[in-house]
Image (cartoon, rainbow, N blue to C red; front, side, top):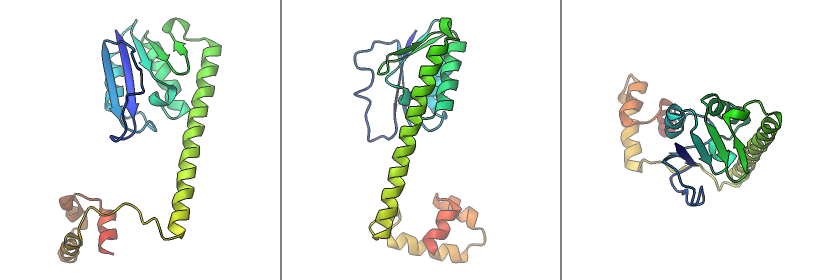
Amino acid sequence: MIFNYLRISTASQNTERQLINIDCDRTFKDVASGKNRSRPQLELMMLSLRAGDVINVHELSRLARNTKDLLELVEQVLTAGASINFRKENLFFSGERIDDAFQKLMLTMLGAISTFERDLLLERQAEGIAIAKSKGVYKGRKSKFSNMQVADIRLRFNESDNKTKLAKEIGITRAYLYRLVA
């Protein structure tokens, strides 16, 4: 079987640029960050793998955003006797060439570059937020509660003995409950 794996980080993005005109028997699509491996469709695809299967991925960063996960996922694919094809980087890893030193080197280097790219992005984002906060422009995400709802939550907070239970009833974390009433 031929599988296409697509991943976007947020629902506001789309997969239109990934694996254009690449035929497959089944497509697995995740809307989740690539920072970890806990993705439902990725897990389902990995469980579905059989010897001889081929996975197409648009680019390395769509499969994993850190080198360790990337190497482990590719190893898992190869151990299953399947192959994986990273289209943008033109890299193909096959179960027949599981110990190819050059392939491992390329995968590790490109994975490290992808990890580095993500780290730089997060660093720039943190710098921008810090500057915006110092100017009083950035105040975080807008609360999902109206002023009347916050007033009601404060009343319930003052009357409640079990703050954890109250937070669960409202559908928020205990820490956020304390920030709301502060």
